Amino acid sequence: MGLVLLPEFFAFLSVDIFVALSLLTCLLDEHFPKALPYIFQAAALGGYVHILISREFLTIFGGDMRFWYCFIYLSVALATAIGLCLYLAVYKKQWTIAKLFSGAVVFPMLFVSGFFAFNYAGEIASTFVLQIAMLFSAIVLGVSISVLLSPQIVRKYWKRR
Image (cartoon, rainbow, N blue to C red):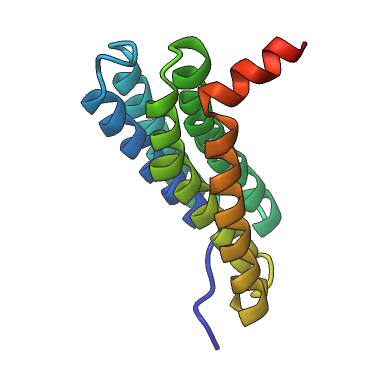
């Protein structure tokens, strides 16, 4: 029998994402607002409080309820990472940094989270065929997003309209 994940694993994964985003926005401080790393640290701290509250009410909340509020917290963390990438690409118009950020930060976060979500959903991700499909889709999505975010293609698209 394999290792069974608890729903709070997704909350810990979300806290790690917020801490990583805080560190990255601190390192890339000329591209992001100065208060953003502190907001991400507060979100990570909120995640720890969330885990403590979840532990205290473990008997009251069922497994489904615990999964959904941990999964929603993970969704917010992933949406924030995607939002940072879009901020760089659309608002700051720094396409190269946005492509690097999406390839080095956003997509690994999305696929690691997706892998664990599928694994939690019933050991689906343990099959070899699904692992190959996830790898293939990661490659296709990474290449297509970097092509989509190239400034030449975007300019050509907007000129046609």
